[in-house]
Length: 282
Length: 306
Image (cartoon, rainbow over all chains, first blue to last red; front, top):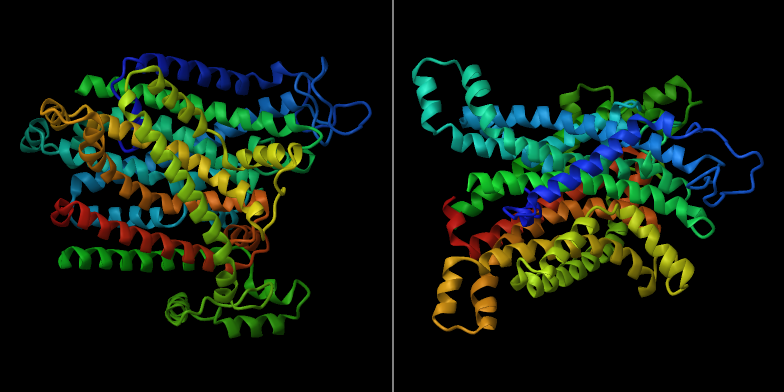
């Protein structure tokens, strides 16, 4: 697998446990995101305290307290889960489609097409991703779709590299040669013989890509380049309360924990899958 | 070796050219009109036209790109729209702060990660093994900017041991460098732990053991050199990643380096500074990757023919 860190978990009997706990954690987060309006009485972006005296610590009315503008923190976290998961999911999907497409074509056709595609991969990898993200996020008009698009444009290289590598070895297999000899078109060979072969690897990369996308979205939101106001997002929640850290540390701690939990969930899924797929192939 | 060098060098050059092209195109589609950025929104149309002509913005794109490359070749990165200062000079002033932060963070993170990884590598399958994997799983999930804020709270606000942010003394360096280093510590610890651990389980290590080699010799002479070769590649890739970490860390700690310069230039739509910073970072990454390729060619002769 491409991720050297993920390699750590390969082939261990713990894989099922990892995958299971990852799926549970991810499902819980998705559930919170979907059911956000029913899980809290408050809107995420309105003043909900009757009289404002600065941020309030957790209480019965506000289980996670209120923030610097008198808004309910739990409501903001729950609705923020929507933003983070949707943005990361869309971004990951765009990089997946782009990367798998480029990887399949490059690996299958080879020659100058392959060289050109890999040159493009090199190019994207050369620019520090966050700087490229910042520039792109500024260049494109701000909307909910900007960040997913930006994540996709920067993140497709991992998919492309891995898929290309697998296709290079797959296309030499007998069943591919046989299909070609029988007169199958390029599109048929790609869709019916090569795509299924690279699918397990893609699923793993998609899980790991989700956690990467959550991290990127959080970083961009923290810098003030994320989803446009008033949409709540975990990254911006950290930057909004930065000067209040001394009086209300929970305001900073909670969104960070939420980000970390999402990243851990998708990484667990990815590592678990690597272990299971890895031991099956061996 | 010479052919390998030439291939790598040529590849780096074409990548650099591609980077300039992408940057040029990105900068051209930026919604802000440079002339308005310079002269202000209330400027007369004649003034704006004069500025556009002066910057060559009224010429065809190909001519503009050629002019851009010509200026780059002469070390001219343009002039800041906001301060009117030379971009190359502005970047030059910021490099030392970023270099200090990045090198310190990388060195400490790498060193402690390496030591942790080597120390725990022989314990595969044990509780220690599980602990390493779990701690790094959580550690690598913590957002950089959040970790920085926590460190500020603990060591700056509560314990009052270190400054909350800023630049100047060694005390100012500790927290931002620690923020950058922690991620790398987890990253390299896990990588070395796994890779050296895997090497320890391989056949030639078993042979060495069977021949009666001491456990320390098995680790230092047999498992380490082979288990550590891929780490050179990883270090090369980390340079680009490090620059991303630097952007967030510098923002959290108000560190006057390239990362903050980039973020500030984006918010003030100072296109030449923004493009200059990205180009500078890209060149840095290219040079580092070229060095890694060279190093690789030396320590692992097989790749020269790859």
